[in-house]
Structures are given as structure tokens and as C-alpha cells.
Image (cartoon, rainbow, N blue to C red; front, top):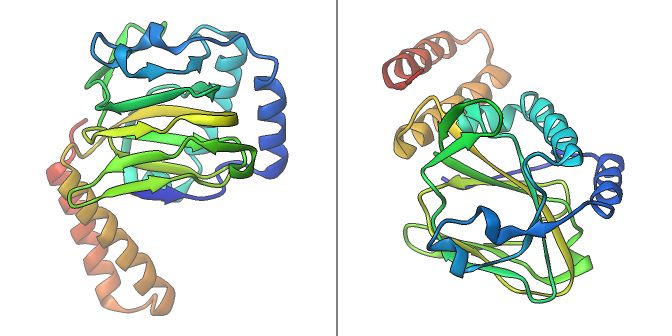
Length: 226
């Protein structure tokens, strides 16, 4: 299940993010790649202990907790603090699958990466290339979203970032451990939740709304891992 989540950041917030990231101390992104991915990765990242990165990461974590679309689709149990990357001068990231387990910096804890997220921070017209390509079950999906929009997708899928041949592609990225580990079950719960919301809006007093809501919570109770 791939989801596009709109309006994560406002235009003013995006402007501020880009101003701050324009002054950031970027480092070679290969420093955080695994022994296989390092051969495919050519970008820049902020260090996990960079004060600016931590400031922007905390802001995004707070914002994500208020976005109902993200909560409903991801059913987050743990979210790795967002990180930031930049692609310029032909930088790219070849086909790869993300790590399964991530350490939370400074927390002595680990999370399982069930879902990957990329929040686009640069306007699409400001750079050429830089498309995020995700291998779906039957086809490859290509995304180059407007600034402020985010893509949420299974971390178990092959994906890549095409070479950026003009300008700079700025993005935030992070991983989520979901309450519901299986993608198929999480997709069913998301569809059920959307159905309940639609019915509640049209006919809030309909008895089916309460029954379906009970079914949703019983399935979540059955399938969740905390």
C-alpha cells in the first residue's frame, strides 16, 4: 500500500526549512549506508547529532502526530526521528531495500522499519531528475511530489532515486514501526477506517457505523503488536 500524504508542511514552513537547510553542514550520505547499499548511494545527509537536524526532526515528529491520514495508514507504534538528505550534481540512489532494524540515536533502543517515508522539501521545478521510483507488486511507480507532500510505502520494496542533473533535491526521510506488522492487514484496516469515516459523515446515526467501528477495533486488538 503506497499512500501520498498532502500538506505536511505549509508554504511558510517549507520556506523556513529550505533556508535553514541551505546553511546546513552536509556530509557524505554513504557514511550511513550498509555494505551493499553503499555502492548504490550518492547523496549528502545531515548527521544524526546535527543540532539543526534535531530541531527540524522534532518539529516534524510533532506534526506527524497530528496528521490523521498518516496515523490511519501507518498505525505507528514507533517513528525513527526524521533525517534529511540532499541530491545534487548527478547524485542518485540505485535500487535497494531499506534496513530491517534501526537504532534510535541516543536512546539505546531499536525499531523495526515496516514503512518508509519521504517528505519532499524542494519544488519539483527547482531540480531535474530526483524521482522516487518504487517497485510495486505489478509495476514500478514514479513520484516527484510537490514540496510539502510525503510518500508512505512498505520498506520491504525495492526503490531508487534517479540522478539529479540540475538543482538540488531536499527531502526528509524516516521509518515507522507499525502496530500491525503485516502490510495486507494494515491495508484492510485502512480501507475499513475510510469506509467508517464515509458512512459516519453521510449517516452518523446508522447502526452499521457502530458495528463497523467495533469490528475495526476488534481486528486491531487481534492483529496489533505493542
